[in-house]
Amino acid sequence: MTAESAADPGDEPESTAGYRGEPTTAKLSEIIRYFLFIGIVGFGGPLVHIAMMEDDLVGEESKGWTDQSIFMEGLAICNTLPGPASTQLGIFMGWIYAGRLGAIVAGVSFMLPTFVIVVAFSYLYFTYQQLPAVEAVFYGINPVVIGLIVGASYSMAHSALREGDADLEFSLGDEEWTVDCKLLAVLVAAVVVTAVLNPNPVIAFVVAGIVALFVYRMPWIRRHARTVSLWAVVGSALGALYAARDRLLAAVGPRIETAVTSSPLWGYALALWANEWFKLFLFMLYTGSFIYGGGLVLIPFIEKYVVHEFGWLSSRTFVDGIAIGQLSPGPVVMTTAFVGYELMLSKYGLVPVAVLGAFVAAIGAFGPSFAFIVGFFPYFARVRENDVVQSALVGVNAAVVGAILGATVTLASEAFVIDGVVDPVTIGLAVVAFVVFVRGVHAAWIIVVGALVGVPLYFLDVVSHLSL
Image 1 (cartoon, rainbow, N blue to C red):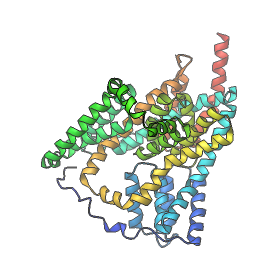
Image 2 (image 1 turned 90 degrees about the horizontal axis):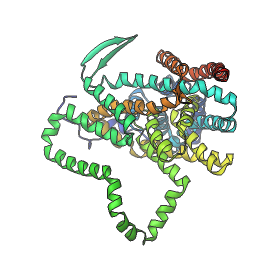
Image 3 (image 1 turned 180 degrees about the vertical axis):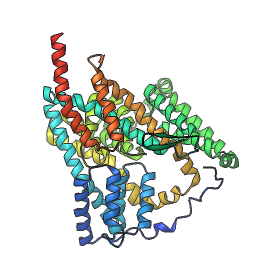
C-alpha cells in the first residue's frame, strides 16, 4: 500500500500472450458438455465452481485446457472485474481453449441450467403466490435470506478489511481477523449512507476509491499534484451538477425542452425510454457493468432502482427473488431473470412473454462479462498490475460490503415487520441462518429448512391472531 511507484499500465504482461485458442467442433462440444455439467451440479457458490474448473481443466492430469499460471492470472483478473467471478472465469476458460466462440459457448452453457431453474421457480412463484401455503413458505424464507446476505457480507468483510494496515488483530470464533480501522470507517460510512440516502452505488464506490487513494497513496498524489488537482476540480464540478440536477432542470428545463423537442431525435429517445423492454435491457446492462465485488452487489442496485425508482417489484417480492436465485447452482446475478419475468408478466400477463423478459434481463446483466473477457481482457491484465488502481480497489471493496448491508436494512424491515409489528420469530430465523451459513452450511439447504420451518410457524401465528 505504501509503495510510491506504480506499474506502467502501458506494459502488457507476457502472461496475456498465449490466450485465445482456436475453435473446433470437438473443442466446442467438449465445452458444452463440461459447462452444462458444472452448471447443473455446481451447488456451493463461486468457490466450488472455481475449484471444479481448476481440478478438471488445469494441468496435465486433467483435460489440460491450460496451465496453472494462466489459470491463476485469469482468476485474479476475473476477481478484479465487475460481475460474477466464477461465470467470468468459465468464459475465460472457454476463450483460451477455443477462442471467442468458445467463450460464448462456455458462458451460455454454464448459465443455461441456472436460467431454466430460475424461470421455472418464477413461474411457480407468480402462479401460486397468493395461496396461503406459498405465503407460509416465504414467511420462513424471507428472514433466512436476510441472514444469508449478512452472512455473505460477513465473509466479504473478513477479506476486505484486512487489505490495508493491520490496526486490529483478534479471533472471532474459528477465524483470525485483521482489521484496518480506516477501511472499517469506509464500510460503516457506506452502510449509513446507503441506508439513509440510498445513493447511486457507483457514486459510493467511486468516492470510496478516491478516499483510499488519499489514505494509501499520498506520496503518489503529491508527485502528481497538478493532474490530481485538475481531476478534483472536474470531479467536484460534476458532483455539484449531479447534486443540483433537479434545480437545474427546473430552471433551464423549459428552454432546453423548447430547443430539444424540435429535434426528431428527442422523440425517438423518449419513445425508446418509454419502452419497458429497452429500459429493462439498458438497466441490466448498466447493473452488470458495475456489480463489482460479486453477485450480491446487485442488491443495492436493484433495491434503489427496480424497487424504489421504477416500481417494478416490491421489497418483499425482491427478497423472494433473491431466495429463488440462491436456490439455483449458478450465480445469484441470475436473480435479474426473476426481475425481467415479473416485469413482463405484470405488463402483458402472458407466460411466454415473461420468459422472454427474463431472457432479455439475463442478456443485459451477463453481457458485460462476455465483453470484459473477450474484448478487454489484455487491457484489464495491464491495469490490474497498477499499484494506484489496486489501492483504489481496497477502498471500493470495503464500500461494496457496506452498500450491501445498507440496502439490506430496508429489505430487513420488510422481512421482520409483519402487519406493522416487529416479529421476533423472523428475527430469530435470520440470526440462525446467519450463524449456520458462516459455519459453512450451503445457502440452498438453509433456504429449504427455512421454508419447512416457516410453514408451521406461519399458521401458528395466524391462529394466534385469530384467537385474539
